[in-house]
Length: 101
Length: 187
Image 1 (cartoon, rainbow over the protein chains, first blue to last red):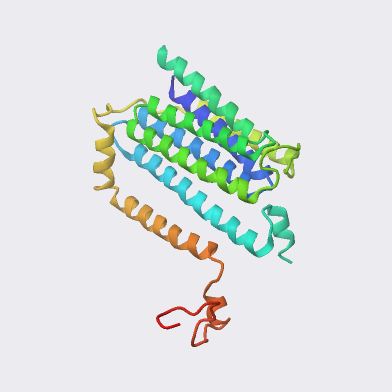
Image 2 (cartoon, each protein chain N blue to C red; image 1 turned 90 degrees about the vertical axis):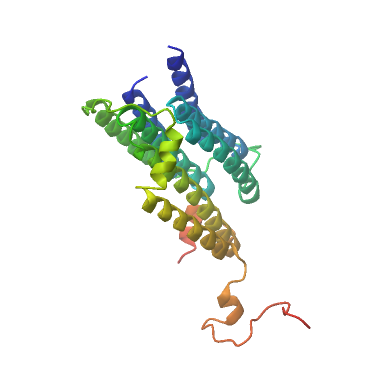
């Protein structure tokens, strides 16, 4: 175990999540990609806390921040899907963009 | 040695489950793959000695994915994955962008001269976190609290069927709300 290995894991999770967020059409699947990206951020922050500055709590605060962002993203995402579905009966990004015009 | 085994198995499982999220046909299976991946993330955080945050992540992800599965079944076509289908656009472009991002991150990780470990973790990192959030990081904590409160308001406003423009007209000038059932005493 080393800092580099943990950060490589974080980078891998972030990249996979980015692929999902870019490629998925469904809004809910897109949110899953964002969750994976934030999971990578959590691993990275925890590893930096453990391997670089364990006596300061700032790394832990960063993890708390990422977890909160996850919760907010999830709640707002579902609210947007609900509003979109109610207004247009769609749950895909492309269809929502087409119907804008 | 034992820690290495745990690290590698959790890491492999997290990445494999993360990939499977976008390969499963079934939305329910994709949700559970994401849950597995994020539980492994929680396990890695536990492995790094952050007991409290690791358990928080594990608990939160379990509930979050349960809610997500419900929304999946509500909104998505083909939630059970009975017919193979893909709903992706610009797969090649996204794959190229992700490969480039990963290569750049990996190069940065491997080439950066990381500083040596400074100080030692105290016996109770959770206590450190609490003292930090209630002390020097108070502004962070207050911002997070405010953001969460704003989220509550925003989700209710977005998810409600009839907003104030439906009830009071487009210019909000109506004297009484246009409700299907009048409220109040003596209706």
